[in-house]
Amino acid sequence: MNVTITPSFLVGQIEAPASKSCMQRAVAAALLHKGVTYIQNPGNSNDDLAAIDNCKKLGAILSQKDNQLIIESRGIYPKDNILDCGESGLGIRMFTPIAALSPEKLTITGSGSLKMRPMNFFDEIFPLLGIQISSQDGRLPLQIQGPLQPRSIEVDGSLSSQFLTGLLMAFAASGANEVTIDVKDLKSKPYIDLTLAVLSSFGWEVTHKDHRQFIFSGKYDYKEAIHYKVEGDWSGAAFLLVAGALAGDIVVMGLDPFSTQADKAVLGALQNAGVQMSIQPDQIEIKKSTLMAFHFDATECPDLFPPLVALASFCNGTTAITGALRLTHKESNRALTLQEEFSKLGVKITIQDDLMLIEGGKTVKSAVTNSHHDHRIAMACAVAALRAEGDVTIEAADAIRKSYPDFYNDMRQLGALIK
Image 1 (cartoon, helix red, strand yellow):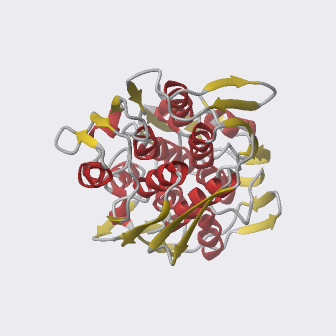
Image 2 (tube, one colour):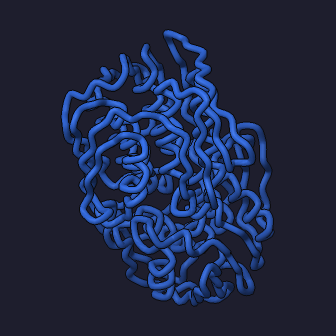
């Protein structure tokens, strides 16, 4: 699908999408919880739907009523020996250790760019936990057979915190006691804080020492019924907030300023760029602003690169964002993809090792861009188009379905001219 966006002025209120980071973790926790879970404000992105499908395949019964997802589970009892995580990096890294709680032989696979993402972590760690595993030279599909036996181990957290998220959930649900996971060079600590917060909501206690050692005590405050509300998504809302800073006076509702989500850090970047905004308990008002170049460290929140590149394109001066090395293993190599697609818009991006430099404040051109089947690239190009000199077309624009399927409709609701 191709989408063409005409420069537009935005006005009005919009509800932030449901957080897929919260949603997927809640679905996994509900599967592990032996009882019933009521998930309010469930998401509907492709990643969310893949999590729901795997939850069913691993034995849970799901139903939906009044914007509420109901999950009944008695633990991990696979109904299917093939799990498909779609293109979800979190899904594959979280559900694989969870599935390994079962003694059944299972195949874990995915699609698109996920097939090329490295999964060597499992090849190295699973044998230490009594899990048989074979992969395609560190790539999908994976064949595993548990059951997982929690033991004190050390893991490398430099590639992705999502591997640790899966282990934390599986260890907690297994009843691990007097066991530790030591982590070296952990990236994206806020995402681990989110995992721990979800586990706590479901009754599992996992503590840590400075995110370097995670300690399992076996404590579990069991409740038959769990009620969990999915937060508004700071990752998706970052594009709406940048859109407001570039092209209008809008209010984004449903965001928690005290959230543990890593991408809440977008507020700091917006403030550094001189954006006018008012932060309230459940909404953020943001106005079209005169923007200045800024410095920002996105090492802990690399998903903010695409919206911040769109923002920096209109900031006077050269913006510097660190953390570019975190972009290699995404839906595309995001650093190179951002450089390629924004060059079509007349924006010069220089990559120096871990640093990305964006030269802003010049005319953003009318052009035909391509998402490279990366949802965040599609949204970044769409937001930049709001203040371009003419129409911007995005090829493979339906990539947004992975995380924010209502993005174009929400932008239209605010007044964006999209066809």
